[in-house]
Image 1 (tube, rainbow, N blue to C red):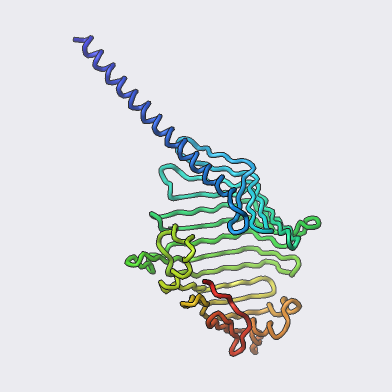
Image 2: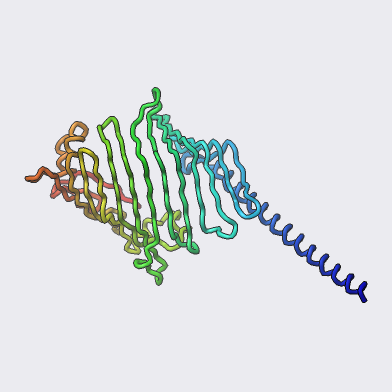
Length: 331
């Protein structure tokens, strides 16, 4: 009797071990397959012509994180298109197996930009650069960018600081109150912030910028955003870009602006923007000649503040009745 019970228990243990081995083997195989697929997709980016589509190459490429993560590391990453190229020391992306709709991206400083045609060379450095994208199904729930201590410099001859800041962050967030579920359209709210901006060449110190706005008429499936006819689809859906508030202030100047724009059936932009500023005309006076300067900033009031309203009609930007710029058709 005892021997029979012993044999029965051993069979159960062996069966359990077999199941565990099969599950582990299956999970491992699936992870290895998925890691290989991710590697293959990244390598495919290097097959682009670099003219019509950006070419992306990695000096080193690895996918790690077994068993519960996929950690992609692309070192010495180069993105090139035409005469322009961008090199980043390292791009790392992480996604959890049990949360595949949430992607985290980290970049290692610096990023080096070159334009072979103009000879321009720029470096962008930072202490922390992270981005995240979170989906709800195939609909964008949130996209965020957070950069600490960014520094832009000209490296053509030495290393000349062009601009620094303590923080830059930007967010796109799903706006459920403006969602059109019946037509599979979503709206996004936008928020941006820039702190402690310094531009030595223009005597800018203590600059701070904030922006709030949004976009309507977007397909609620992010896979459609890369389709060739996306702008026409947004236009047909009545999509609109809105800047509720753009505010900038530093030790010598300030700017407040708002506006909205949309596209007509011919791909032409239409909209209106209002601008109020102080100190910017003095700062940009040597860079922007008349009558363009007045067309952009307007005329000063009794308090010294400049105000202007710009109307965009069928792709033509008007300051009052005077056309000052033309926006090419968007499709």
